[in-house]
Amino acid sequence: MQKETAGTLYSAADKIFRPLDKREARRVIEKKYNIGDKFILAVGGTEPKKNIGRLIRAYHLICHELSEEFKLVILTNTEDHYEIFERLAQKLSIADKIIFAKFVSKRNLPFFYNACECFIYPSLYDHFGLPLLEAASCGTPIIASKLSAVPEPLENCFVYVDPYDVINIAQNLYDTMRNNKLREELSMKSLECSRRYSWEQSPKQMLKVHKKFS
Image 1 (spheres, rainbow, N blue to C red):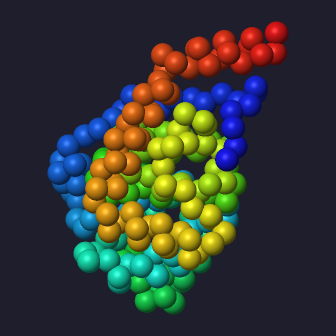
Image 2: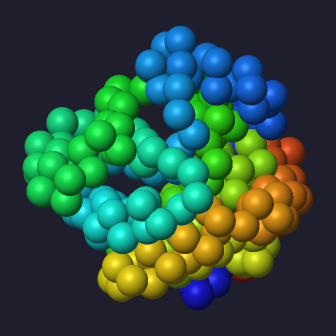
């Protein structure tokens, strides 16, 4: 797990990212995006490093094994690679279970984080992904790539997966989705850890880095 380094600054999530009433969030999502089902959420685009192909294959392995249906909703603000993943979903016969929501505005993102049952971030390589902090600030249960640059105070808040291993992603996703108690615990951990990253804390982090270089 990558640790915080002298030159690393972790921002805070915007204050719009906060816990909301789940039923109200789902109502907004259904009204604005016609998504009325329970769902697993992925955010961050469809470029190769976001690892959407492996996520879709992992979801395919478990989606029929769960006791209730959870769609996979993928938010993306780009058209790149979009058709590739649509064709993959069709090939795996799960196109009806995957929803690509394109160009979702920032003000609507908190509704997605609050409405989803779980947020998964299987990135192959990334600096600390702001979506992780946004989701944590909403109290969302999180599954994250163990290769993402996650700051130390958040390390115990998530379930971690090997992003190169489809079976590992599938197993952890399955275990998380079938265990309501685990998701409740992850939700509490997300909120607790996110409080360590606020705009009030950001100046303290900057001062800490400055001292290391002075």
